[in-house]
Structures are given as C-alpha cells and as structure tokens.
Length: 128
Image (cartoon, rainbow, N blue to C red):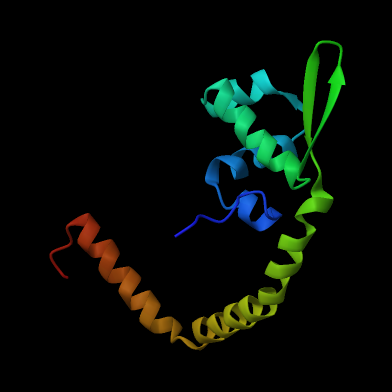
C-alpha cells in the first residue's frame, strides 16, 4: 500500500513528532538551523528534511540574513488544525462539566474518613 505524501497538507506534515517539536521550538521565536539541531539533538540532514516538509505546507517560513537562514513559524498555516480541533472543544467542555458535577455530588464525609484512614496508616497508628 502506498504511503500518503507527508507534504499533502499541514495535518500530514505535523503528524510526525519531530516536526511538532520543531514547531514548538519555532513558536518561541525565529531560529537558525544549527540552533534547531542543537536543541533537538538531531542531525542537520534530518532537521533540514523536516524543515523542507514544513516549508512545503507553509507551516514554516525562511529568510536569509547574511550567511544564515532563519526559520520561523507561520501560524496561519496551522489554522486548519485549530479549526478542526475546535469542533471537539464543546464536547470536551461538556465532559469536564459533567465530571465536575459528579465530584461535587460526592459525599465529603466519605473523603474525610478515607483521608483519616490514610493518615493513621502512614503514622503507624494501631487504632486503624
């Protein structure tokens, strides 16, 4: 079975964990490739390969400054991912709200009794 091209879209490009690490570093600011190599502990050819893929989908931009090439994050290219994840945000919020309600309904005396038992157990209290 043929493997899908990693440069087809930003979703495929960021599916690779090392590329996400590069994006995380670039989110902090513009960097030359040598900084990325040092920070990620990868070889220069690997970092360059990942940067090429990220550039092809528009997630990373490059500019020349003297003899250096500086890479930066292009957040606009990541918007499709943000928009897609956002669709699930409501579901997550509803689930967390349900969990909060369950926790609030728990009997607080049950928790206190459990905590006292744990304290006696830790202190070696023979009355446990």
